[in-house]
Length: 184
Ligand code: HQG
Image (cartoon, rainbow, N blue to C red; front, top):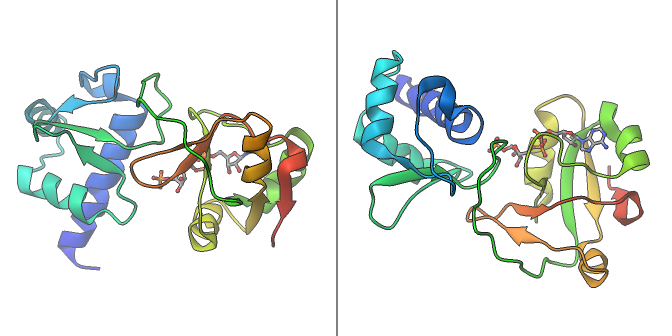
């Protein structure tokens, strides 16, 4: 991995932490829709011994493989597209999901999930994907991956509301166990 790629990954991790979870830890002002002023962010990064240039920030937003971040239409603010644990309102609009969705998890959680259903834990929503590959990658982060199939069509029919973030992550409050099947 080149030094440059390595830096971009570090920036992405830094932004994920502070734009989703702990902005106040470094004194970052975040509005109720998750937006942070870019100049203020760059200033605060510098103050916290993590200097970033505007060009690097633009490159991270553009090249991020999961499109984790967006600039606003004025180009003066940035936010994470999903994954927050702090209370913000992304103004998500309910959307009809595909017939099925996937959730990647780890073997150690499976019994509990099949018992309690899928819970959002510390995030705002349960995160689901349209493709197996993404689910597998998510599951692999914490151990042996297990993929669950969610009968999203039936859930929607039964009144559950689905949202889709700007970076195509499907979101729902809760998935009761009766809508879950183990894929692998
Ligand atoms: C598990 C990454 C026991 C759930 C990814 C997961 C994703 C249960 C963990 C995004 C449970 C929560 C989110 C239950 C759920 N009993 N365990 N009843 N219900 N769980 O990190 O979905 O790279 O909050 O299976 O790509 O893993 O950060 O959620 O393992 O899109 O952009 O509880 O984070 O995106 O873990 O990952 P997380 P997640 P980024």
